[in-house]
Image (cartoon, rainbow, N blue to C red; front, side, top):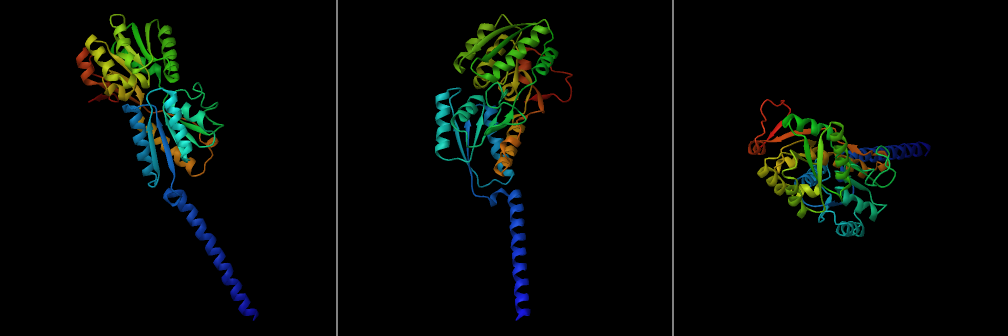
Amino acid sequence: MKKLIAIALCALITLVVFTACVQDQNGQADAVNPDNHNPVTIGIIQMMEHPSLDLIRETFIAEMRALGYTDVNFEHRNGVGADMTVLTTIAQTFVGNHVDMIVAIATPAAQAAAATTSDIPILFAAITNPIAAGLVDDLQNPDANITGTSDKICVESIFDFALELVPDATTFGLVYNLGEVNSVASINEAKALLTARGLRYREAPVMGTAYVQQAALSLVGHVDAFFTPTDNTVAAAMPVFAQVAIDAGIPIFTGADSMVMDGGLATVGIDYAILGAETARMASRILAGTPISEVPVATMQDFRTIVNRETAAAIGVSIYNLPAYVEIYP
């Protein structure tokens, strides 16, 4: 009898150990293969439609799929610019639908999401200055339910490149939306830089895409070049802005590569495909259980120097003998 009890006890111990091993293996598999988790829903609020923001969304979703999140339901909603009423309504809908995460693309979308929920994890994307926008107090140690990626540009590098292409430029026209915190921060940096270098500037702030053309026209004849940062409002009207500049023979230097593709002359700007993919990797960590406080805000370090060949030809700017790292589009 004692022998039988010993055999049964050994079998029981073996079963417990085997079960524990299986559970441990399954846990490890879950960390590698997210599809072993329950399906999740991610709500994506995008401030508006334009190439840079669309690219962030597309690469975010593609990278999530590549990371194994093939069973995620992405609910995507576009706002109408910086209309906080519309953006807040979208955020409230996501909260009411009990989404597992909100991804907010551009500053007004992130501000609307942050004001709507303190429980659901929020990832922002393409926020130039998250602290000034009131989203986080510390980039390294987010203390609420929100973190994300910053698209802060290097204003000095853009102007260095601008003066390499148009060395005789002495006055820059600054076109931006006063209502976008990200734009105001970059414009203030540009004004300080230009003043320090003994250069001049004239401002033409706008309050919506419908005003961009008139703002640009108001500066024609008064400036040698335009500068616009990663401004979502201006980006949405970039083809119209670019045509005004081309007709006047004035180069536009921008904060984003997509704005060059839409007719601007050049930038040393953010690669939004990289930013979208990094946002997805952060989302993966949070969905796997990493506290947001342990996911610092990511600032992009990879900048893309790009020149629009057709715009350069149209306004008579030489792009010969540029360094090999400069991309010529198209």
